[in-house]
Image 1 (cartoon, chains in turn orange, yellow):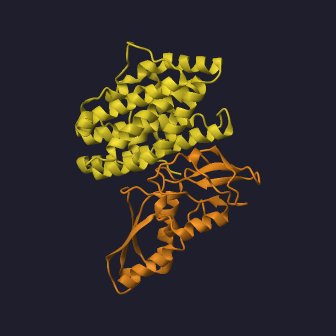
Image 2 (image 1 turned 120 degrees about the vertical axis):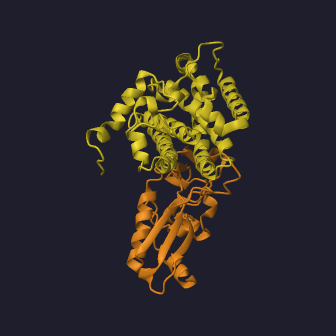
Length: 167
Length: 255
């Protein structure tokens, strides 16, 4: 049973955030638990429950991620899959993995800075440009192309870039 | 459907929170593609999206409680799309037309202040589910409050024209601000003693921002209320007829 659980964590590593396809849902830290609710020796007999927490209240990716989790597990041979939405405790960027933050940067999105409990105003942060590495950057808007991002611009290379907000 | 006969204070309270979020979210969404600058258009539509998401969480919770109570399946969609205006429990301010940019900003600022300090208190509530939704929403609200406070300052402490617009907005909307802390029975049931701190925090924040912006708060004026118990302005009917048209015309349609 533990083997099955470990295997499911690996399968979910392949499920990506549809908005930021370099990040897996494990990198994001939104998978809260995996439970084999009814164990069985063969996969088709097992019942699996994946607990997922949404990043933002209205993140449009939530429904798609849930569907992708189901599909990934179906493909792996599981038949009885349920997804539970967990709202408490609320998701925080603190749960994002270190490798996830590195992947974000390579993708051109500045990773969240600091812990969510240190509520430094976004305007006062020094955000490093993911393109050229300069710290001479400025905020354009606290609201960006998706709920989780803010829009910045680099004063050095002049390129605009997204910052994944600390949440 | 109607939720008028429901006496359970938690369900009524959840509908009140959800209706506030849905209606102000809908009003904000009307700015989509019409904002004064691209960044502000995006900011306001992001806020709208957060609000509609928060409304969904509250509706889903209410729907599960109502389904348990009545034995018939009620969903978030039936609550949002199939209730009439007397069933809605949002504050009147949320449903008022957007007016100009100053009125939109003032509305959003007042709503953000009340939602922020309310969710701060609710995040500590003994009802874990309610606390969870509030804690999640609070993170989003901190951005809404900051954005709308900045804009009140920018307009109030800006040009002669922007200050005039802001003061005009206050004259138009101020009589709709007291309702937020004029508590009705179902709110008192859920919030208990915490209303004292919420009220104090809200008043302090509004006073501080207005002072910094050089804006004057009207004194001793008539204050509207009624939204929380389903007595609405005519504006809500127009919002609902637009928002609910599809479900009313084509019941159970999905896409």
